[in-house]
Structure formats: structure tokens, C-alpha cells
Image 1: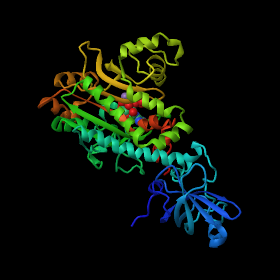
Image 2 (image 1 turned 30 degrees about the vertical axis):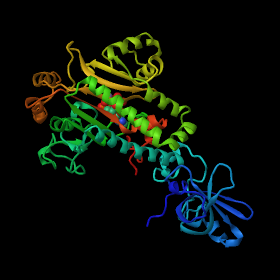
Image 3 (image 1 turned 90 degrees about the horizontal axis):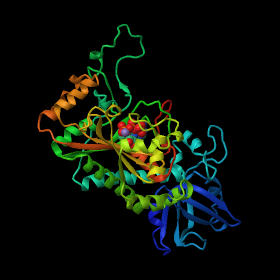
Image 4 (image 1 turned 180 degrees about the horizontal axis):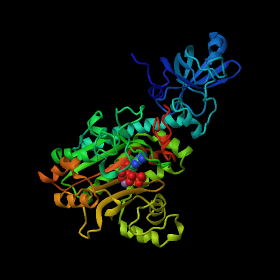
Length: 467
Ligand code: ATP
Ligand code: MN
């Protein structure tokens, strides 16, 4: 039998039942004859207060050893707590040390690094393997887990099939970002021939890690109508920002027989569902982030679930930005991509809320986006939110074979590797649309964490993949 989780214990009545709990010691407070241990097992923000009577039980030796960070098993009876701020405590009879954690350095074992009550996020990033023992990272982790499940709930309820698109791929899709190469060619010995002969490589061609599962998802949407992918995505970006990782998780629904309006409605409904789930099921975590990371977080999220997302064309958005051009490092101008400072200004100052920007110039968007009748803009949509900027990027796809081929030729793309993709437009083509939500950006938004490295267990960024 598994031991009860502290989360569950905390919901029991104080009925003097006998209990054995396991976890890690967060704090130990010693009074004259009493010792209080706060035990946490990561199942909830709150720990279980365990009270020991030092003399009666002759536990002094073990209690001295059992410092912050040690894993222990404690047996006692559950009673109501006389202390303020908690309902229950475990009147503890015995304690067994499972794994000690020295509070002072010993030969060969430095002291447990998490002795203080609060540590800087920078410091914690350097001990990524121990940071889940902190309130912040345990809360991020629980919220992340719940939201990953919510993503499946939303799509499964709406008739979407979960597709596992490949991680290794030969299509460097859409130029969404620089690709990491995957090869078994020997890089250790100097090359004699140049250029590289990829027919000798493992797959007989040049391959890399996927930058998006979209193109493959499209093939399944063209058969199963509604599909989604949710998996690791890789971009060899050197951009050292608080919103970019080299390895992140992306959610990509693709819907057949759906135009851009359907796509925008889906994105809005989806985000609202995810936020509502967090509000309903992660209340403890949100309250924590509200107190420690972003004042008013909960209220902002509640407001967002009630307000319709403003929709505005790229052209109007640029006009808004031009009214205040002096405020920006990058001058806004029609044809330029929106910088993060522009995105934030639009959501935080002009429209004061979530925003969907549509119909971008074709030059700054991917080849597969559907061309508008004006011949200059495409049916793209980006969902922008205050504080973060872009959280979702998507579009209606070009479903006409000739138009797509023309665009690919214009861009100098080699269509030979894309015959399979063009086949979708040759056989039973349909209007279809989709988008990509960066899962870590969502978690950033829900927690108020400012650095994306703090919402994924082991962040991968340029120069950082230690463990
Ligand atoms: P950005 O302009 O913010 O760099 P993008 O336009 O390159 O993003 P898309 O190709 O539209 O990104 O990807 C869809 C979504 O994936 C984005 O809206 C964002 O939420 C997320 N995303 C993209 N790149 C990254 C990254 N390097 N790290 C984390 N999330 C990302
Ligand atoms: Mn984008």
C-alpha cells in the first residue's frame, strides 16, 4: 500500500486516527520540550505539522539528525492543532530517518543547499535538481501537470484526436526557427569531402529536431478532421530572452473545414478553458503566486475569462503603434514584424487585455498561410496577452495547390521534399486552420513567473544543458 499523501491527510477530520506519513522536512522548530517538524511531500503547498514531545519518547538522537531536507517517516495520531493558521497536526510518537541531509558540510557531503526560507531564482536555476523541493517550483510543477491534463480534456471533449508527430524530421518546416541537426556522421574526425554527403547519414538525408508538428498534423486533419499534437519542440535560437527556450512544449490543434474565424474562436475558448481550470483546480498555487510573484494575478485571470478577446488587423495595430512611435526602440512600420515591446504596448496600453492580431503581411509569415484577396496579407492570427506578448500563433492554411506552389516558388523553396504536403491540396483539399500554443508561455502567464526557465523542469537554452 502507498502511504497517504499529505494533501489527503490535510482533508481528514481530527479524529485521533493513527497515521504514518512520509516526506521531507521543511523546517524544524525546537522549544524546550517540544519539537515541531513541518513535513512536506510535494502533494500540496501546505505541509503537515508534526509535534514531538522530546522527553517522553526519547527521540532526541534522531530528531537532532533530522534536519531540513532529510526524508523521514513519522507515525502519530491526527488531532486538531492548538496553533493558529492550521487545523490539524500529527501528535507524533515515532520518527524514522530515511535519508539524512546534513545542515553543515561534512567530508564529501556539502550541506543541504536549501537551508534558507527564500532563495533567489537565479541560485535555484543552478541547482535544478533540488529546486522542486521549494514551494515555488513544486507549485509550478503541480500547475503544469494539471494544465497538461486540461489540454487533453479540452480537445478530447471537442472531438480532437491526439496525434504523435515525429520529433526527428527532414522538413525544416516553414522556417519557424533554426533547426538542431540530427546526425550519426562522425564529427570527431576532420571531413575530407565537402559538401557533406548526407546519403551516408543515418536517414540518408539531412535531418533535424522538429520546430513544429504542424505540417504532419495537417495530413491527419485531412483525414480525421480534428487533431492536435502536444509535444516537445526545438528551436536553435540564440535569442537570450525570458520567453524563449531551445526545447519547449507546443500544443498544436489543426481543424479541417475551419476558417480563420473558427480558429480564433477555438483559440479563445481554449485559453479560457485552461485559465478556468487553473482557477478552479489550482487555487492554492494561484494564491501563492499572487502573493509572491504577481499581485492581482487571480483577479486578472478571472477578468480574462469574462472578457471577449479584442480582434484587430495587423494594419490597424500598426496604425495604433505609429500614433506613439517615439515610445519604441524599434520604429513600428507596416511590413515589420511586431516586436515584443509593440505587443505589450498593444495589450497593456491600447487595448488593455488579450488581443488577436490578424492578417499580417505575407513577407513576415510562413509560406503555408492563406493569401488574402489583397495579395499582400495572409490569414494569420497571433494571440497576445498583457505582460507576455505572443502566446499563440496560427493561421488559416492555403488549400489551393497552385497558390501554394506559387508562393513556394516566390520564396525559392525546393518543392521536391514537400510533395507529400502538396498532395493534401491535390486530393480532397479542404479549408483548414490551426495554431500553436507555447505551453511554457501559458504557464508563465498563469503563474506570473517572469523567466520561462522557471516554468520547465530542466530548461535548455543556448549554452545551458548541464542536466
Ligand atoms: P516568437 O515571435 O515569440 O519568437 P514565434 O512567432 O517564432 O514566437 P511560432 O512559430 O508562432 O512562434 O510558435 C507558436 C508558439 O510557440 C508561440 O506563440 C509561442 O507561444 C511558442 N514559442 C515559439 N518559440 C518558442 C520558444 N523558443 N520557446 C518557448 N515557446 C516558444
Ligand atoms: Mn508566431
